[in-house]
Image (cartoon, rainbow, N blue to C red):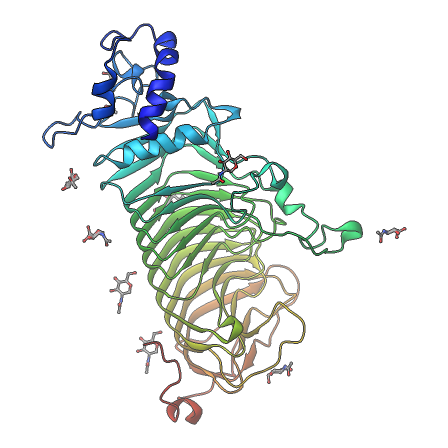
Length: 471
Ligand SMILES: *[C@@H]1O[C@H](CO)[C@@H](O)[C@H](O)[C@H]1NC(C)=O
Ligand SMILES: *[C@@H]1O[C@H](CO)[C@@H](O)[C@H](O)[C@H]1NC(C)=O
Ligand SMILES: *[C@@H]1O[C@H](CO)[C@@H](O)[C@H](O)[C@H]1NC(C)=O
Ligand SMILES: *[C@@H]1O[C@H](CO)[C@@H](O)[C@H](O)[C@H]1NC(C)=O
Ligand SMILES: *[C@@H]1O[C@H](CO)[C@@H](O)[C@H](O)[C@H]1NC(C)=O
Ligand SMILES: *[C@@H]1O[C@H](CO)[C@@H](O)[C@H](O)[C@H]1NC(C)=O
Ligand SMILES: *[C@@H]1O[C@H](CO)[C@@H](O)[C@H](O)[C@H]1NC(C)=O
Ligand SMILES: *[C@@H]1O[C@H](CO)[C@@H](O)[C@H](O)[C@H]1NC(C)=O
Ligand SMILES: *[C@@H]1O[C@H](CO)[C@@H](O)[C@H](O)[C@H]1NC(C)=O
């Protein structure tokens, strides 16, 4: 119904501004409109999804915009009233464009280049017809900072795609999260008076969140300066990420590039990510994840975890990270778990990864803790079947290049090292990789040498059938 209202209230305006339009007269009968705000698409007609005027005034003539607008079923947000001057709140227009595009198979919601659209925190909800394309060639921005965020909007998320099967978010445009004012909140590390960290509201929005959705593609975009994570996928299935460029300053807090959680069937390819936190972070409930050809850094590297917080069960399996570069980062490839958790991390392969000046290029930390007074507990997320193959390059000598800290009661098992060559970026080689309670094999000699891997599987694991239970 909101369509019809918009249609009626703006009819005059559109016709006023688009006098060149010939095939729609200002004397549309209201009855026609309310009966069918859009023509039902004929399955056989490629042009069927084009909505009625006034939403498509530019369709009638040659499009100044060149592409996409004359492609099948394009819904240009400007035709729904979006202004794109970098100031006007265009949320309503985007919602309407979404609601229309959502109704048709293979339609394109188009955000044209040459414009900057400001939209509030918005949930784009499905289900939609399949094959929906959200084509961003212009710039999308949220309101600038917490002071101008609408009171009744969530401060934890900005653009949310919810319950959608078959969506491609793509284009050559820019998504600018305008994070600075959020990073400067007094609650953020060292941002209070005299570089203290003060209590107070700290929620900051994830730029782009996909929730309970499937068959997703995200491709081509530049995304920068998110207030918090740039992308988060949770409860999703079949996700393909390709050719993204994600940037935020090295000191921006919590600005993970891509975070996945309870999500499976994920491909993350050919992307460049530099930020202030993890390049990619993989949370509980993820499996069948393939990561290839990423360039990460500065940042905190590629991370599985943290897992098992608040004694939770966490399960992550079948993750491959290959053919990637990690540079100027606090960590390279990391697995981090809290004391007291349960579940398992298994079947993880890190292969052909080039490190440049990385602290902790290879690290397993089962004593992960962000608060004071963490105690050692008897249960832990079980880490097993981890392969590190062809991990080469340089490290920052402030930390050992390999660090395996496994919990006392639940050792890490079947950790395989093959073709590891890590040299100091500057200074003297750190000869002692850190090892605690770790079992596994070296398939080749490593640089630096590692002599602390224990053989076989320890009794504590063999005797405890429930260890690493993930069913
Ligand atoms: C749009 O139309 C122009 C001119 O008719 C054509 O050259 C162009 O290929 C079309 N673009 C698409 C995406 O169909
Ligand atoms: C949508 O279009 C695709 C390809 O054109 C087709 O395979 C699919 O059946 C269509 N889905 C619906 C619901 O019409
Ligand atoms: C949120 O606030 C805006 C402006 O303050 C208001 O227009 C809108 O109706 C509110 N929405 C809800 C769901 O309360
Ligand atoms: C901040 O530091 C300055 C200089 O040390 C001191 O004079 C001032 O009282 C401090 N402010 C607060 C709020 O702690
Ligand atoms: C996703 O795509 C696959 C393969 O095209 C299809 O079988 C499946 O039904 C789609 N939807 C979901 C929810 O998986
Ligand atoms: C790797 O990704 C970069 C973009 O970051 C791309 O230019 C390059 O072609 C990709 N390499 C391969 C082998 O796909
Ligand atoms: C592991 O994940 C890949 C996709 O990344 C999939 O092709 C493969 O079948 C999975 N392996 C197992 C054992 O499930
Ligand atoms: C936890 O255990 C590790 C390994 O035994 C030990 O180094 C560390 O000091 C312990 N931490 C606490 C808080 O007891
Ligand atoms: C050890 O882990 C590798 C993967 O790194 C796996 O292929 C192999 O089956 C595991 N071995 C055992 C005995 O589980």
